[in-house]
Image (cartoon, rainbow, N blue to C red; front, side):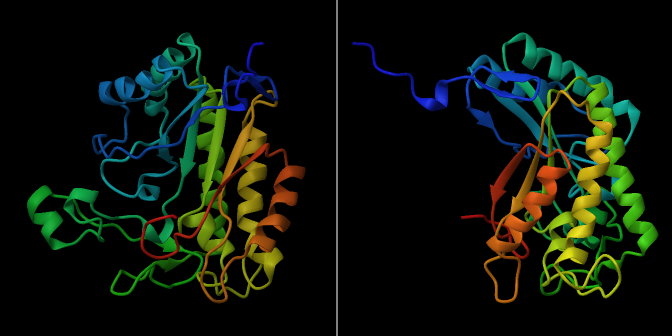
Length: 284
């Protein structure tokens, strides 16, 4: 008698996209891009090998939706039309090898403007200017609260800043669709911009983007609505969330359940569940 195939290896359909199995390669930051944010042969080979290995869905690393939305000078971007062609080359190759091609969008928020990991992964400073001509840039967040002790204080975003950031996510989704990706993933976790709006630890606003749970969810909800409007109806969207902050007074699993219902109603298909990340990196 033949044994049943493990569920991990069985196909699954998400909207109009069929995955040959449920092996998903998560976004893996490689810090290998040049300062213009464009994908290189390195990224083509790095991602292509996962498709050759049989994965059902392969995500790019997080693609910054704005030049100042990236974490480091070596992050991939999707803030300009010039980024489309090299990403399209990657997406097409993944698909020819039987894998679905996924793209993740990110805005680093108050965790942007940092060094590469091997340079310390701390905020850019004088040593980076003198050694590599890498000037720091002003970060932004829902409230003027540093991500960690001794880190630069971000600019508190105005309502217009919030609208522009939402539009950046929307344009990132549009470019990812033009590049031919099958699946989109919105990075709303790990202390980056969306997460920092959700958590009462990092969002101390009293306007429409803060205050109670509904106010703190507003930015995340507007991003979901905006990307869904730019993303083809027959292609799925994942939304990565830090489902718990694991700090006193922080975002909770109950909050995640409330937000997830809103996201489902807006056409988000999968919650990509993670945790923590408001402070030092590292997710258990």
